Image (cartoon, rainbow, N blue to C red; front, side):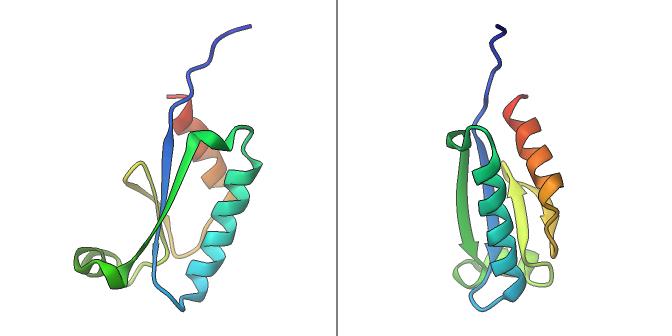
Amino acid sequence: MGSEVVNKVTVTLIGKPGCHLCEVALEVIVKVITEIGDPSGVNFEELSLLDDPELMARYREQIPVVLLNGVVHDFLKMDPAGLQTAITGARSQ
């Protein structure tokens, strides 16, 4: 049995309260993380544009934005299969 290195991955959702697409993105992220074989290797954080002027300036027209380890993975509409593949790939790098 081979030993596979599993790295922690941080998934960040950037949005704002009352954003319907942000609520949908949150549901997709939670579902994907739940479906991963070992979700303990995934950290999740949610940030609001309303709490951070820099995020507001950078992403106000793109929310929801999903970052993987601080790098933009997707925005506006989430692709569950693509997110799962990206998380799995990042965990095994």
